[in-house]
Amino acid sequence: MVQDLTRPTASGNLPADLEAFWMPFTANRQFKSKPRLMVSAKDMHFTDADGRQILDATAGLWCVNAGHCRPKIIEAVSQQVATLDFAPTFQWGHPKAFELAERLVKWLPDGEYSHVFFGNSGSEAVESALKIAIAYHRIRGEGTRQRLIGRERGYHGVNFGGISVGGIAPVRKFFGSLLTGVDHLPHTHNLEHQAFSKGQPDWGAHLADDLERLVALHDASNIAAVIVEPIAGSTGVLIPPKGYLQRLREICDKYGILLIFDEVITGFGRLGSAFAAEHFGVMPDLITVAKGITNGTVPMGAVFVRKGIYDAFMHGPDNAIELFHGYTYSGHPVACAAALATLDTYEEEGLFQRTKELSDYWQEAVHSLRDRPHVIDVRNLGLVAGIELESIPGKPTARAFECFLKAFDKGMMIRTTGDIIALSPPLIIEKSHIDQIVEILSDVLGEID
Ligand SMILES: Cc1ncc(COP(=O)(O)O)c(C=O)c1O
Image (tube, rainbow, N blue to C red):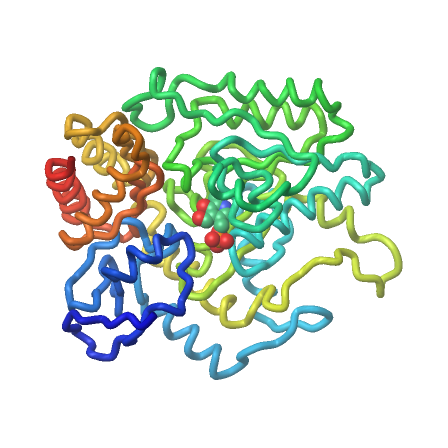
């Protein structure tokens, strides 16, 4: 079906037909009937096809932490693509992949993490981490440790391992029986005990104890790893209760279970530290990252492994491959160049410190929305916020989606999931932008049914 874009456009060179692109995680028919097309971006704003400035309140998809089209990253990527467009990393190498890995391990807390495995997305980082965890136990002679434990409402990307340990029903239910040997901890969200908490809720640390129940059920000798997001983002911003992550760490230690933090959205400054592990003072055994690693400029994901994990694999003849896993584009030169320039930008501009400094202002600003119509919770940490709306009976997601559309009409990009508005702006945000975000949302909430 041919779809004409009839609106006049600023750039004048838009595609005449939007049909062939099967858009991911999108209401395709709704979008194609009234598209929201971005044609350029700079710092805190996109420019849309009508030439309007759109304030980015979500750092794209939680990835553009340093803001859009940053000069150092543009320069690095342009130079790299003209110098070495590609080199394999299976049995070959190129300098930037090693340079980046060395630099990243120095960024990680306390020199605790010794090695980095590269992929191209958060989903691939998660698959890599789950596979490394299972293989690690096997290689140490504990091959019965194969079970994986995720959490209800968790999101770990879209590949089979990730959706198996993930806990969002629509992401799982269409795709068959998934991985066997997977259990889920309860999620930590409870409005009765936690509504309108500023920062970490006081209630809920005991929910980690459910891991003891799973150990009693299966025996620790069969359990490889637990994976959680320190802050669950895609399910609508669930901040971990005080003491919860510490408790998970203690129970994992007690039974020799590996703990994986999926830091695809919390990594690279979102909470004011380089990683949430540092922010919460809880060191997992593996950390998955993506998004902010390259400021969203070039796809890249990575797994950081704690000291000892890599060494466990370094046995057998020198010429034997130690881990049969990897992607053609693991450590792609252009992604590495983008990541190195991104790390420079974060450091030179002190963006993580800036997040720390702004987080109180952000907190008070978003909580000022608590009495607006339909709002049943506001939650926040670092430069993250979730605003939960009461669902329209029989029409879950409809109210938040209406907010999303109205916010776009008013020149702002937000993200919604279920009936929750999730905010995660670039870390270069100014107080005036924060005021603007809250003002637009306040207006939108007053206008919707
Ligand atoms: C915690 C978490 N893990 C994994 C992913 C998947 O990342 P990607 O979309 O890059 O595959 C996401 C994406 O939002 C995420 O939030």
